[in-house]
Every structure is written in C-alpha cells, then in structure tokens.
Amino acid sequence: MYQDKTLVCKECGAEFVFTAGEQEFYAERGFQNEPQRCKTCRDARKNAARPQKELFTTVCAKCGKEAKVPFQPSNDRPVYCSECYAAMKAQ
Image (cartoon, rainbow, N blue to C red; front, side, top):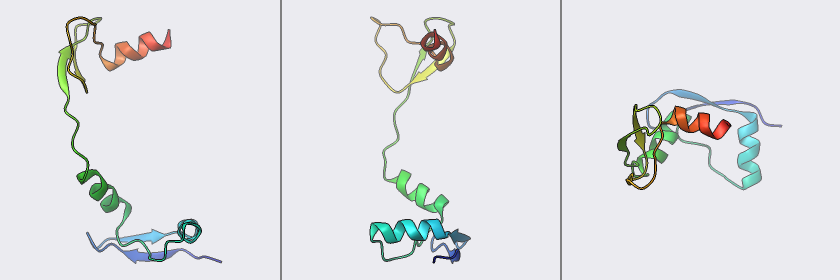
C-alpha cells in the first residue's frame, strides 16, 4: 500500500527517504503531515532543547584514573570510573 518517498529536509536541504514502514507508523498514529526534517536534523533539534548535563571530574577509587561523573562526588562514598564500575557490576 505504501511506497518509499524521497523528501527534502527543510533544515539542511539533504534528501532523505520516508520509508513505507514510517508512513504506516505515521498513519497508525494519526499523523497527517510528512516529516519536514531528516533524522540528523530532527535529532539535533530535539537535543538542542535539552540542557546539557554537567559532568564532574573525580579520581577513581579503584584504579586512580580520572573519571567524569554526572553527580557531585562526596568524600563519604567511593566513586569509580566506568571501566572499574562495569567490572565490579559484572562480578
């Protein structure tokens, strides 16, 4: 019933494919307008509205490497880098 369509992004001017599956999804949801932007521009626009998470720099309690974490570390609990944390979680 649906066929792939090539559309032009209104943001960057690049061509992108509006697949038959996407068209079916839009129809199921009741969306009446075709997408105006390519996936890259849609994602960029979506992420621009979100505030950037502040990352804090600390030292890993296990290996001593520098680690960036999304919370303010306190001295009462150890903080691990992503590698050490993953290794501990796997055990």
